[in-house]
Image 1: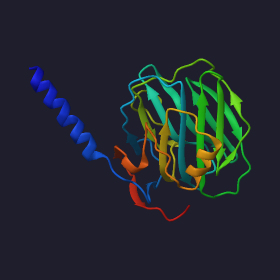
Image 2 (image 1 turned 90 degrees about the vertical axis):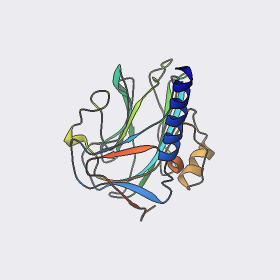
Image 3 (image 1 turned 60 degrees about the horizontal axis):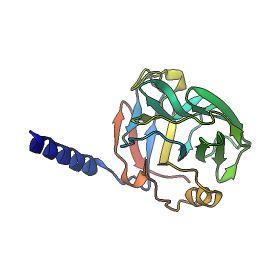
Length: 223
């Protein structure tokens, strides 16, 4: 029985490795509002996070609120969310609490977004197109839970689902990366320029994902 379990584990790991896709030069396109269409991204995150950075690129002409990145755990659907509430305002949610970041932006225009947070200080940083916004602080001493369900293009209202159509993303998402550390300003700039900073949670160049509903992949045509 032990040998059987061992080989099942090996086979599972091999299948997961095979399923990884290099998404360089590609994007996910979310063509229309939906209460179901999304991309589920798989990661083997076994320990709670004391720090993190998430970066991604997005292009949309939506003027109302929408979710870009939703990280839920069994006990908290809003464990970590990157949400744009309106033109010129982003929200970062951690453990159900929320802070706002204001940015001057031309609309519509592509955006490279990075959000980071440090548990020891509670300081949250938000960067748009390589430029830092005013730093905020919240959830000092908190740990972001492990074993997440990560979704692109929808905001989870329960672990593994319950989406709201009015919060869905319509547009294109690419270059999604996640680290278990706070990137330095130099590293954020490199990420904005498209220079690969080796991630250890999510890697766009080796992505394990599942598309559900009306989502398609196409070559990137903007930057």
